[in-house]
Image 1 (cartoon, one colour):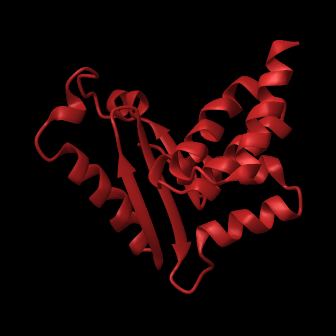
Image 2 (cartoon, helix red, strand yellow; image 1 turned 90 degrees about the vertical axis):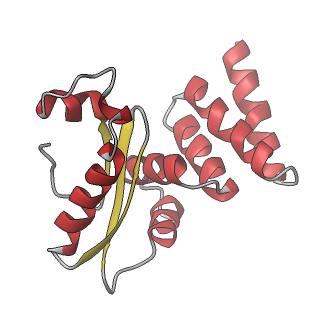
Image 3 (tube, helix red, strand yellow; image 1 turned 180 degrees about the vertical axis):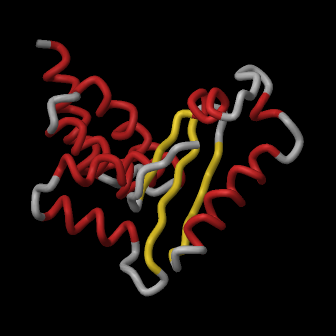
Length: 152
């Protein structure tokens, strides 16, 4: 897998399978496939002195890596959002959203998508936020705005 240096990576598994000539339909079901992919990225980042959290599903490989003495990825992305660095925050939010059941991440991912004009894509994360935390009132407001904007 070719992989550019960054702290967050979401790889489409069809690319990974193509790069390694895996059968797209069955590669992720091979015994040990997910463990091998996780180990590959974890070891790659460990060799650079980074800690990596890696998840694999049927479609993506998600990697969030930070230096051993680095900042927590959630705190980092929240700082980016506070300073309105939406384009920079989006890939980190995407990776964290795919890795964690966290209402705050889901909400911020949905709002970030909405602020970037991707209203239709913002609905799923905002709905997930409400599902994870029924009392997350800002998510209801975000959903209302998004539904209003999609209706016009």
